[in-house]
Image (cartoon, rainbow, N blue to C red; front, side):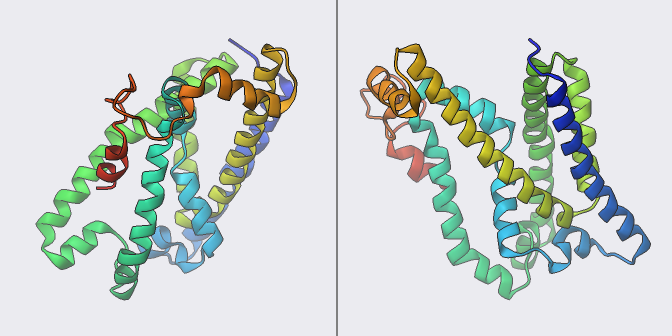
Amino acid sequence: MKTLHTYDYIVFLIYFVLIVGYGLWIYNRKRKEEASSGDYFLAEGSLTWWAIGASLIASNISAEQFIGMSGSGFKLGLAIAAYEWMAAITLIIVAVFFIPVYLKNKIFTMPQFLHQRYNGTVAMIMAVFWLLLYVIVNLTSILYLGALAISSISGLDFNLCIAFLAVFSIMITLGGMKVIGFTDVIQVFFLILGGLITTYLALDLVAEHFGGSGVIDGFGFMTSKASDHFEMIFSKENENYMELPGLTVLVGGLW
């Protein structure tokens, strides 16, 4: 399926050049200066609170959410948002109880914390575990789903799309956390804008399909035609209960 036109490719190209160009500019500037690993991973302490917040959101939204969770939402309904409720509650707990301790002791990573609290062996085990998990599971699934989306709407070869996304990711990360932080501000803007536009268009199409018009009619038709998809917490009688077992998902999933 190919639905992209010349203007779409131009937009993609401009976006690619801007993001990659910024990353390479920071990278080349760092090469001429004396930079440490702290500069690379901590952005020299130059990130503002809103850039950190945007980066936190953007870093946790990827092809897994846009494709995987959208598919789960179509099947299960609003209850799939339980995973986001878990994330919200967890972030509040971390911000209130853990971050102050990390800041006080200048701890920047969990392996560093475990090294100070226990020993280097425990820290190494955790570092290797999470590194393997992210490389083998997270990154591969994100590359696969992202390439699947691009290949489906553009008609480009699937393997070429994977290679493109991999190179694009590497070029962005060359500049370190500073590049990632500020480019994530751009990313989260387009993620939210795209999500709102997609929601508007989808609801409008639902209304048109059932003989109505506008997003209000579309939302009304959704709630009446698929009322079972608007349950946030599944009861035991729900056929999908074993996939998202009620409050157990929220309470158990936090840990």
